[in-house]
Structures are given as C-alpha cells and as structure tokens.
Length: 308
Ligand code: RRO
Image (tube, rainbow, N blue to C red; front, side, top):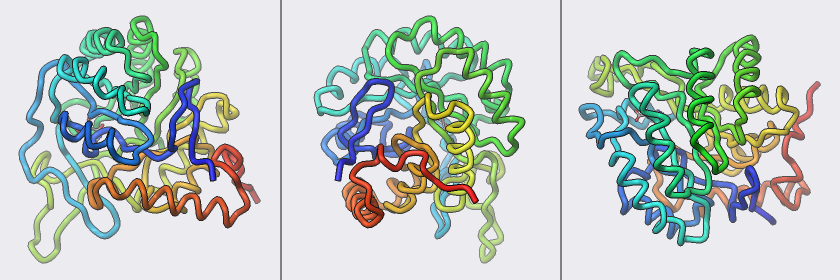
C-alpha cells in the first residue's frame, strides 16, 4: 500500500506526521522525529525570542483527549533557522511553523526562516493560549493582512494552520480570504480553543494557566476536525491540498480524514501520549484499512466520502 503523499509539489514518504507542538520543540526532539517513521518533521511554532511558555501543569491527557495551554515554549526563530539544514538530511520534508506575539513578528520570522529553506512553511493563525491575545484566525481582516505580508517574503510553499470554525458562514468568509492570499496548502484544525477540563475528585481544573482554560485535542475533537477538512475541501474543490489534524488516534481515524479530503494527517495528542512508536502503528493500521476497503493508496480515497 502506498502511504506516500504530495503537498504543494513536495513529496512526503508517509502521509502521517507530527502536529506542530507535539515532540518538536528541542533539537533532540526534532532529530528524533527525523529518525522516526514520521512522514515529515514539523517544528514547534516559533516566536522572535525564545520562550519558556506558561507555568506547569500545562498539558493534561485524559481518556477522550487532551487539554493544553503551553504558551508557545520554543527556542526562538534564529535557533530553528540554524537547525533546518541539519533536519533536511533525514530524507523527509521539514515544515517550519511560524507564529508570533504580534502581527509584525510574523514577516520578520518568515523572512529569515524562508532563507533557511524549509520544504514548506506553515503560518499558525490559531494559537489559543497566549493570555490576552485572541486567535488571529477568528479575525478575517487581520488574517488577510497578515497572510498578504508573509506571502511577500515566503518563496517556499506557504500553508495556513487554521482554528476550527463552527458555522458555514465562517468557512465561507475564511475561504474567500485564503483565495485572495496565494495559499499553497491548508492545515486544520488547531486545538479547539478555551475548553475546560475538571477533575471531579479533586474539585479542580487540570492545568494551571488561564484558570484551567486550554486547547482541546484528541478523540473529542475528531468530528470538528473532519467537518472543517470537508468544508474547505468543498470550498476549494480539492484544489488546495489539506493536512487533516484533529482526533487521529488510529489508522481508521486517518482514513476518515482522507475520505473527507485530507492529503496527509498530523498527530498531536496520540504522539504525546504514546511516543514516536505511534507513527509505525498508525501507518500499519492505515495500510490495513486501505487494503480492506480496496484502495491501493491514500490518493485514491481522497475526498470520496459519500453523502446521503
Ligand atoms: O503553545 C501553545 O500553547 C499552543 C499553540 Br502555539 C497552538 O497553536 N496550539 C495549541 O494548542 N497550543
């Protein structure tokens, strides 16, 4: 079974890779991704200055998923720019995730990271965890302004990491923004922002930042992720490749993302909970599912979900 995929002209040996944020902050973690069965190396979203992130505990896994309020812990963009040449030697694409604490940071970071020549750049419009900073992706005008500015300095394929939207009117508005910004690929969804998980025995929230509010991931967000993948796949008629992220815990979950229109999938919660061995398991399970359903590759089933 062929599990390879192509996104914006870049070939990936496997269609399963880490989601930005999951085991990808330090050099050691990025090198470990390089040596693993991951189909790409995706970096942690980077800011101008290195950051320690929010106070701990700031990630909590539970049976249905996870909640996090990491607060953008990262090495700062200069460190990632220096690491990219080394990371490119693992025979798989490197995706640099660019963030920022204000609008001006994004083009500053994007220009230097672009010069380091990652295979693709993902612009994160959807960090839910910086106290006092709303998710840019929920402001279509700010999103368009920012995407037009970064597009000017990015020459590698440029993608956008979107937050989940919950109404077709919002999909439509963001679809129009993306259509005006020369976006080469999409990645959805980031965590479902500002959920709240409570431990009833301790009568406490489970993470420290923001009074316990944080981004949800894992099984509990799969249906939201699939809906967003499907909505944008239909808006662009399959012409902008989509990385499906959200709720992929096993090979069948990945298959569902492909049916809805994804060209690759990323994993966050399951990678943090299970470690790098998750990639081999997911690939084996996905190959088995494709075979069982009579597909020889992921490309063959892309977008093929039937409507009633
Ligand atoms: O670092 C984080 O708190 C974080 C980021 Br930048 C993001 O985009 N999504 C998320 O769930 N956490």
